Length: 404
Image (tube, rainbow, N blue to C red; front, side, top):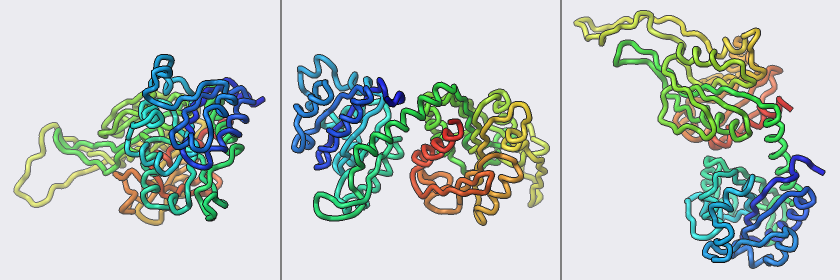
């Protein structure tokens, strides 16, 4: 018996692809682990399997139509979307992904996806040309940005006779993925882990109306905070000035200057995890002017600066309250890995996550990123170009693996 799955509630949306028959084997595997399963059979899915075959395995009714008075009287689409621990869409066709990405809600499945506050996991399945088509890639990127997960697809022979990527993951692979998904969250819940994440820019004021700052949007840090919270970690976000929405289930503390950020970070200790993604100003003005600095007759204005406290270095070298895992960020313009390694050594943190902020398509203000994680032992893992939400999820999984 796999205790991580026992008693879990899964809402399975069966899509309109020939791979839909695999859902029956998946249901068998899950039911052996005492998983409660409710299903939505789409109009397309009904072409490949029958409601009777599903009901006989799940021992629950099959939901099909959004305007079914019998179903609505017992459980409407809102309560059904709240009932589960996770929503699984298998197979997720190119059409269904396009609908989810655009926010359409013209049937029960798409309405539930749009109305739900639960994690959605897609199991893509389609012809290789459909999978690699630019439209599908853009839809998938958009869904990753929404926080959806993807199980597969794999590479292999397809029902159409072609070979390539786009084949639906096997029931066993989906089963193992779900087992790991719930295992991660159950372990974290039992350990009652706490995390702090710093994000965004800081501001260093010259006078009441002027300040020095940088282009950091805070998007990657906000995404990491939200991802950690989804794993069940009690997460606090210390944020410089941004226009981003507060992530769900994350406590947020707003600051402006580097000193204010350090002060709030100190108050949050002890924590198990510290992720320092904020772009903190290295210097502040030595003599702040309480009045607006006026333009003088001379052509030059000379300002004197002093070094700001280093928050990452403070956390990594704190003897009694040092977090078990201290992760820093290195936003570099050249010699990315070399400079990130130097920062890792100098600051004495556990990981450095490096990225190139001169790349025109993945710099501070974009929703896309590409990073390299450098560990203490100089091992490097790369996360290829993807949405910052997806990268946050991958980083969070690696963080959690440290606490098994």
